[in-house]
Image 1 (cartoon, rainbow, N blue to C red):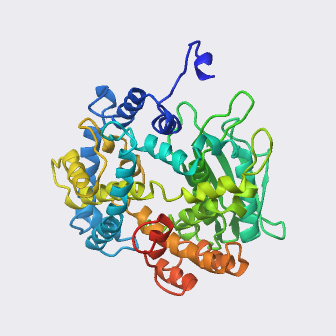
Image 2 (cartoon, one colour; image 1 turned 180 degrees about the vertical axis):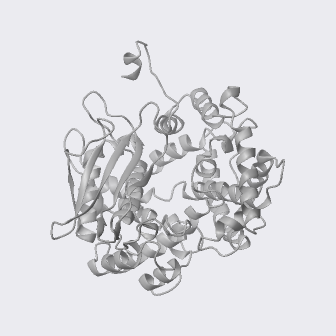
Length: 473
């Protein structure tokens, strides 16, 4: 469709995240996979057009962050970053990541050996997703292409909203009277069980030219109730799903479904707050290494059949996801989990060491290669310039904080284990999670909030079990 719109024959494949993932996962042409990998991994670097090279920007950002930290008495930016996080010391973060890596590496090596056995050549970075998909089809007779036919975006959205209603009693209703910035954007009012509006949010779900890649939420308006002025929270939820076809149809992969559930978890955190001070309401004031708890917690529901029944409908027949297909999906859940975790640990260690060890003239690629040598298994070519497009760290809020994803994943897995123990729709457990976690924003020490919900401090056992890694599996 895009090629035709541009007056071209064949296919037009833009260099955006959904297209990149689709190509490296499904393209049988290894040459095409490699071309896309190279284009993706050299974005905004010295390997491409000079005017887009971020090398100088990275050096300036790191220097300025070091200056900021020293101005207020810290040795480095990592220490400065931890001043407002749950983690107490830089050593604690490094040890946490190294502990996860030690549990994960053996399982990741076994996964890599399995997919290596399917290939007639050494596995490279542009091969792993492709052969993991082949292994999934071979072992579980299921593919993302087959699955996505059951996940039209509007059905997934409705199932997700129904889940929120079932857990927390909220009602979400589209409001077409609110102005939007693009024809594909929608606005939803959020009401409590009595019908009282408690907030609202926009959804901007599809990739388009000029739109930032990735998925995120943010606040338009924070909750406030000061000096007689009562302001309700409003947010926006942004994804980059495949654009609808000429019939308005957009089908999601199960990974897309997980992303949607993830971002919606953030949105609930923003909307359900009971804190009246904007600086502490919703996601505000929450330690950065805990703010991913509500989002990663929500992802767990997207694996349960009772949830997916409400979130799926074949785009032609309307049939919900068959039980046998779900069983295969669930069986395949752990496939590639160790490699994926090791990749995230690699990102986190690179980020944290860069901001701990930074000094004038630091060689960013040298730090990355040292980390990859220590914890990585998949080989990356010399031209790879991952840092130059690492927007989480250099253009977002995750500087010296990318470890937060794993830190919060431990919290989320342990929190969801409470639902597994009581039943995933157990209203008293959901009410306790809402009151102790979602409603308190940054008004309470987060470890105290977690202990109030769980009855104890978190452990890594549930995360390892959910990932099929280590002795807890």
